[in-house]
Image 1 (cartoon, protein in one colour):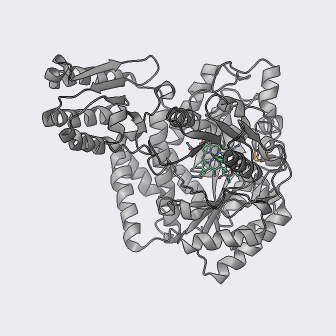
Image 2 (cartoon, helix red, strand yellow):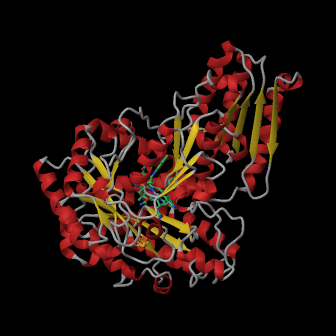
Image 3 (tube, protein in one colour):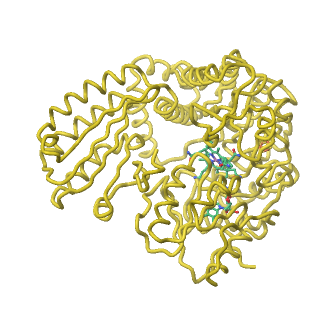
Length: 588
Ligand code: B12
Ligand code: SF4
């Protein structure tokens, strides 16, 4: 059976995380993949390409969970694992009779999964490559879509397949590999076999890789397993801890986290040199306003720096979704696919909805205060005595990283941050320094993200934007008067200010000269977002527009750019930096 695209098909992979999507590619079929959080962009891309006459196919984890949401967006939807149904689609397409929906109703034997086409990915743009060994998880957590999509009986690739994938990655000089399994230790005996194989592989090849993975907390109770993780050089593991509240864990049927005190488990894993990243959830039925403080204290004491806290979200088809629907506790029309937003689709039981949102935002604020970051670094390093992570970079790269952290991260926080940074560093144990540095880099980037996306707009932002607007209008008055440009400011309640600038032809160098520093100032000094609509522009001004975009790139995630059809081919907009609006109805 053929399990990938036919060999005579030419395939290209574009990942908008690291590169721009092409707006008029040379292609017959365009497949667009995405998780729930990416659904708005996925929908936008599908609509855009479809309108331009391409045959568009939707796939990925959200299409697998709720293919019905894609029926109006795509010519065909691949729901579920693609190994068997994709070749069927390809054959139907070649015959000129593709169906609208291909749904994998069973499960795929992973021995049939091909080696990924790593050659089609720009691997040099990633810090970590991914490899999947197993699918499925034996547990029963009520909120989980994994067991709905992949089942409870873990399925595995052979170690031979893993060897082939590692060889391919090694040949491309990849140093860091993330085993993207739902739970690598779903079947401990098989996991141990894999780890023994990885230990041998690492020994044979001089430890070419740092590994990381996702596993359930019960790994902490098996010392042989922990030893094998260490020997195979797993420098980190992501664990769904969810809550230190045992009631909440029992209620959500995450009983594997209740075998012993969670802090004890965490510290035992640390004692093998393995770092922990973890997921936490607030909004369980037994959670009350007091839960936020309990979560905070646990996260601080555990020293977990990359603590991804989300609001309980009911994903379609999960037992949680079903129960809350029965109980009338699903919020109608709430999107419910993005657990990184301040909002969700469930009505909590132990507190008011608004209380939950406020508590959530305050928890993030507390976690990413300089004091809390430093406390966690210290609490972790106290127990993580021999970290496997050693930050093996060339000396020049190392100094570059530290200088960037100092200049862009630490010094910007002023003396208080410098003080907390300095007190958290293990001055007498240089072997632990790389991990402390890594934690600060991770924490500061999470803090920046939380500042931009989670913290409610400051009243000051509206005042700053209002003042800015008046002076900006004055600066480009003559362009506004004769209709070459227009500018609008809106101050939506509960959201950051929005500025929209529309330009038509007749601009000159002076226009860009006036705009550039003023826009930079607006974005630097407030959380305002910017929408730039370019309807027409003279060819000789393209360079100035391009320069303006380059100067704003730093704030790219707050900037949307819309170009007329003609300009799309002329202006290079990096859609991995900016929101490059391709289809307006779905633009956020
Ligand atoms: C690796 C991973 C990540 C990595 C991604 C790294 C990377 N650059 O690849 C990181 C850590 C960054 C990540 C982040 C997040 N993730 Co994530 N992640 C995963 C994980 C563990 C594996 C995904 C994977 O690579 N699988 C291997 C591939 C081969 O399999 P697959 O994705 O199942 O795809 C199959 C089919 O769907 C199909 N297919 C896939 N794409 C396409 C496209 C087309 C066109 C077609 C035809 C077919 C097709 O073919 C594949 C083979 O059968 C999954 C869990 C899981 N098992 O899916 C969660 C998962 C996808 N993540 C999830 C979530 C929620 C997130 C976050 C929102 C978490 C958070 N709160 O921050 C963020 C979002 C980040 C962002 N803004 O983009 C959810 C998504 C829920 C949903 N149903 O949409 C999942 C399912 C885990 C879960 N249950 O919570 N994640
Ligand atoms: S342990 Fe993780 S993957 Fe397994 S059922 Fe629970 S939430 Fe899902």
